[in-house]
Length: 125
Image (cartoon, rainbow, N blue to C red):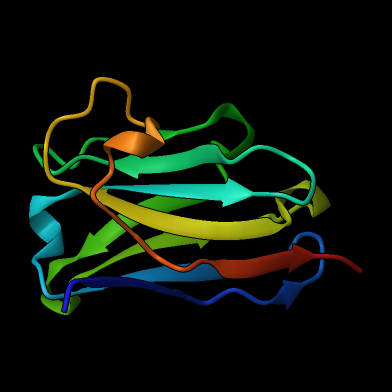
C-alpha cells in the first residue's frame, strides 16, 4: 500500500522547535522529490520547503529561511522538516507530498503523486 504519513506536530511556544517526519511506505522516497506544504486557518495552502530527487537541492520560502531545514534519511525512507525559532504565524496543518517526475514549479500541488494526511503545528504561548 502506497502511503505517506506525517508526524511530529505539536503545540509549542514561540521560539521553540519541532521536527516533522514524512515516512513513506510502498515506495522508495529517495527517488521522489518531496515538498512540505502548510495550510493555516483561513488561508490558502502554501509551499514551505522542497528537496530534489536529483541532486538533493533544497528550497525554502522566504519566511522560513534560516529557521527550517529539510533533509532525508534514506535508510528510514523519510524526509524531515526541522523547524526552529517557531513563530505564531507558522501555525498550520503541515503536509508532505512526493513527486516522481521533474516539476516545472516545485510547489505545483497538482504535480505531486502522493500526499500525507497532515500534522498540526500550533505555535502559541
